[in-house]
Length: 236
Image (cartoon, rainbow, N blue to C red):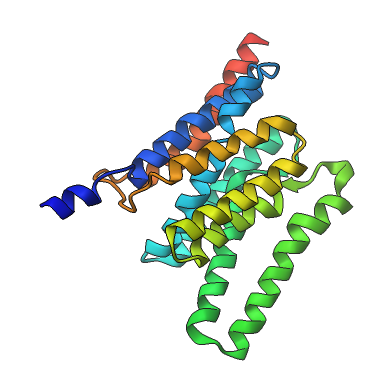
């Protein structure tokens, strides 16, 4: 019983996802309704690393890899259609960024398991594709404001979390990527608030939690974006 109690200490995956949902909502409220209040964007910087870590966990524990990828990709594509219709922007959402992460993770996992010429070529091609999409194309299509949310750094965070084995290796890799992102971010000093997420992740106990909240994010993400957007129209 003592061991069980010890294992339950800390934050479950469900709690981390809820914290991520709350901070993401604060971020989007600031983006759409209070653009001059930097505190909203500062709080919002906590969300992405938490989701990125949980994406890596999802890749590790899922029983159906294809369904997991498609659930993130399809939802991202649907949300992207709404973003394009509402704002006319070609900036791809974090869901599309994480779709690249999942694809890259599966390639590395396939390479590790098989170590064949096919898996090597597939991993190289996938890596090149990710680099082209996140680094080269945004430069070529700069006038059209094409980009992936959080860029190559956002793609790599879940990948590194998945590839590293120990908790401290994962946390160090997340910290390094967030520092890199903060140095180059157009948000400036606000982006450094993302490092708060590392403290939260340090409390992660590796447990999912009792409730099944897998579909909460799928429903909540487009729903809260739509509600905030409608509010912004009504008060404009």
